[in-house]
Each structure stands twice: as C-alpha cells, then as structure tokens.
Length: 392
Ligand SMILES: Nc1ncnc2c1ncn2[C@@H]1O[C@H](COP(=O)(O)OP(=O)(O)OP(=O)(O)O)[C@@H](O)[C@H]1O
Ligand SMILES: [Mg+2]
Image (tube, rainbow, N blue to C red):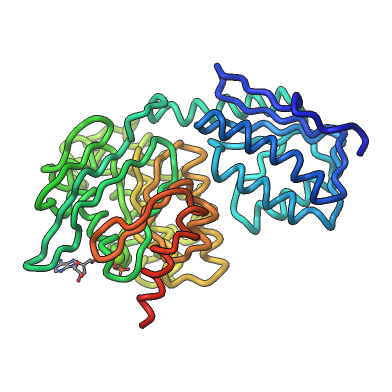
C-alpha cells in the first residue's frame, strides 16, 4: 500500500447528509485489505441507522485487477444498504474505466468527477433534486395500511401494509397471483380497497378515483402495455401532459386555446422526455407497429410526461431481452436520480430488483410475507419457499 488505511479516513458531514471516505493513495492487492476498509465503512454507516450521500476519493488509489470483483461487491453492498446517491473523485484512467464498465453492467450511475469541489456540487444538486419532491421525512411518502381487497370470495389483498420513503426505488415482488398488480391498482385508484387506507404525502386518498390520484402526482404503467396503438409516439406522450392542462381535456380547441407560450412549454417538456428516453427517431411512428420493448419505453414516457412525484411500474421489463432490460433499468435509475422521483416497481427478475431497489416487500397469496433490503429478502427462507412453491 502506498499509504495506510485508517478509520479516520471516514467522515460524516451531518448538515449535508454526506458520508465521505478517502481511499486516496491506497493500493488494494488483497481481499483482506478491502475487507478491512469495508468492515469499518459498514460498521460506521450501520451505527448511524440511516442513509447518506456517498463521496469517495480515489486520487492515486490503485485496485489490483484480481481484487476488483471483491472491491465492487463490497462497495455495491454499502451502496444498496446505505446510499442516497454516490459520487467518485479523482479516479485514474484505469479505475475510471473499471467503474464505468461495471456501472454499465450493474446499472448504477458512475458519477465520476475530477475534483472534490465538482463532486460536492454534483452531490448538492442531487440532494436538491431529491428535496424538490419533499424534505426528508420519517413518515413514508406512500403508506399502505391494512389493505384488503376482495373479488367475490378471493382475497387478492389481505391486510397488506408497507411504507415507501421519498426518493427511493421500492420493489414489490411475489409469485404469480400474489396480489402485486392488485396493490398497484389500489395505489393508483383503479380499485377501491375493501378495507384499509392509502396515504400519500400525509394525505389519505383511499377513496380517490384515478384522475384525482393522477393529479396528486402519481403516474403508472401497466403490466400489459396500454398505449393508443393507432396514434404516434409523440401523441401518446402528449396525452401524459393532459392532466396539467386546463380543464383536463385534450382537444384541438383546448390546445389552440392554451396560447402559444403555454403550448411551447408543454412541447418542451414532452421533448425533454423524448430526448431522455432516446426515442426521437420513432416520434412519428404509430405505437402499434413498434417492437414490444419500445412500446414499454413509450409507455414510460407517457407516465413521465405527467411529471409524477410517485411512479408506479408494473413489470416494466417483462418480455424484454437482456439488452432491453438493461436499458430499462438504466432509465428507471436515471428517472430516480435526475428527478428524485419515488418509484414503486413490480418486477419478477430478482437480479434487477437486487440491482436497483433499496427496499423490497414480498407478497404471496395476498399477504405480505417478508420485507427488507434486497439482500435480506433474497435469503429469507419464507421467500424462497414461496417462490419454490410456484414451481410445484
Ligand atoms: N379484476 C379481477 N377480478 C377477479 N379476480 C381478480 C381480479 N384482479 C385480480 N384478481 C385475482 O386476485 C389475485 C391477485 O392477482 P394480481 O393480478 O394482483 O396478482 P399479481 O401478483 O400481479 O400476479 P402476476 O405476477 O401474474 O401479474 C389473483 O388470484 C387474481 O386472479
Ligand atoms: Mg401482475
């Protein structure tokens, strides 16, 4: 090692919610060295009992190729468990490449900066974006409380409760028929629960109908793509804007009535979404003619055009190939990161859930059977049994 690792290389900046770890001038050649660092990192983070923005200093830090996997795995664990977002400073060209390459594979943002100042500014912006959606609160942003939903005699949901925090990517998983879509339908107002409450940003909206729920800032996509197949991509996305237009009617008359400036603003937002999702080349294409993966992306675009505070995604990667899944995972991470949007995600692919979400609720036969970090849930015997049961 160039220099020695010491616990005082870890610093907490409470007022900025920043956790800083200085790996500069260290050289990692064995797993033991890495474990020594992360043992201390994890220990100190765990002791705070909360999440932080990570700032990691890599100036002249050398990580031997043979221990990169180990280094990355420990870093990833710390990130998933304790991070609100990470920035990295001063990585050498080789380290930068390794981080970038991993970021691409494992779907996180590499957020590399030349100087500590630039990294701090980026963190401050990240934090501000998260705060735009609201201040840090202990009360969950979205809370489901003792939710029951019956179809005839079938209990699709039986006393389900959980809380999703502001700014997090929260996953709901479970075998087929577990009640996942039913839960999303309750949150978005499509179904009224037989019993229980749904609270968003401290407001009980259990009895709201879908349009009123949308106006609260809750948007969704559907398990089976729900686009107007005879309309273009652009028009489908413009429809997402309609909740922000006067009278909430999407008609030519209204459209012209908005006046040029308003129309320009609406267009700009839609253009931003199109640009963000890289679908400019298909803007004039009828959505019905698009491959499935792109239809899913357009549907996400329509939801984003609503500028939601809470985005509900029902199996956004179902039926996609590996590459499309990777793209979608990145878009979800980027939405969360750029706009601070809270996301509730239903997903079957455990790998994706592990990679991108911070908290997981597991449903089975309409009941919550487990809850925790992806790691905790994945190794929970009750969860394993529920999933295995599916195959028999
Ligand atoms: N509209 C409905 N009418 C009657 N039963 C329904 C309705 N919607 C859902 N159910 C039933 O409620 C239970 C939960 O279904 P739900 O679609 O919520 O499961 P899911 O976890 O989303 O499953 P999948 O992984 O297959 O999408 C199932 O038994 C289902 O048959
Ligand atoms: Mg479903």
